[in-house]
Length: 129
Image 1: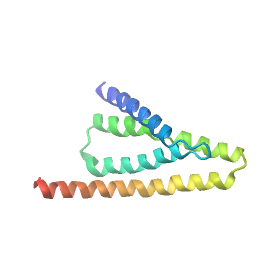
Image 2: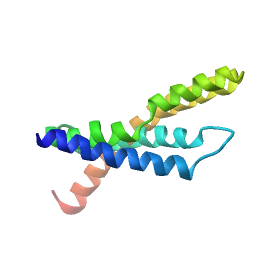
Image 3: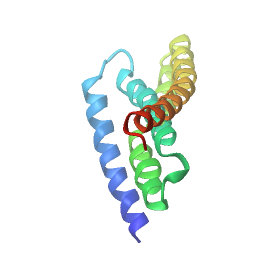
Image 4: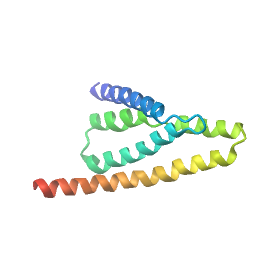
């Protein structure tokens, strides 16, 4: 049961964080808040995996990956916004938004992963772990 509670708590925190980020970056002409959430979630999940990797317990994975990042990331919002842009006749903007979100998302996951690995190496060399 602790894994279920960890996922629920992580999801609650992730959803609230997404709400705040979307509000802070809201632009009426373009879904900048959703883009910031999607790109930052790619970087964060890469960092989590890079730092903790295989050492995560099921409860930690539930909280961080399924809960926190699942609640924070907004893929369903992204695809809705792309569809809405297409309905409004803004095909080029929709395609650009989709490409930016996906390509930069993959790049940021990789960046987060390698930053996480570098952080582990740095910490272990400074503190002789």
